[in-house]
Image (cartoon, rainbow, N blue to C red; front, top):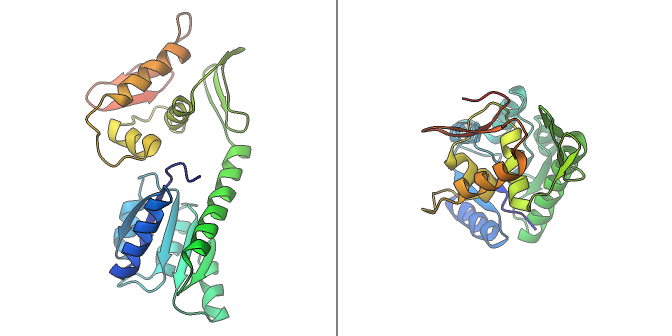
Length: 231
């Protein structure tokens, strides 16, 4: 159900952090944990997380400051805020800083999962209905999963679709193998296989077939990119 979505847990209580990590991994998510707001902001910068579980009471920069900073920077990642305080004023303050939902400790893990799923559905629904990627005569519709070069339909496997979507989400931007493994496969380390290269080859055979202008390029020593221009 989670499709290996990456979640950042920002929690300075080691017991709670480990409880969340174990539970989220069991449910198929890919969680990481940091203990303070400064590390949270640094970790979230460009690393492909899809949701943040953010404790309010953190050392140094608290959770509300972290959330406020994210929104000020234009980062709309879903934020589920955790707090030990149940007062209405505290919940309202957290939501006003930009949090998407609010959960009071102690909480049932099943309720946490339900909140996570609801936030990811909401985010996914927005993306699916609002976004369509285009590059030259290549188009990708995220609602219908329709991929075309001009009028020609291209049939992709789910993983090929996810890989192409990741490349098209930053046209001209070089994606390293590590970035691809993390964002498409949910892996934090290289499994010592050439899986990325194999799937890039599959995509090229389908997207850049003879007669079409090549759009998927190798940037030697760095990775891959989708671009109208060669490196």
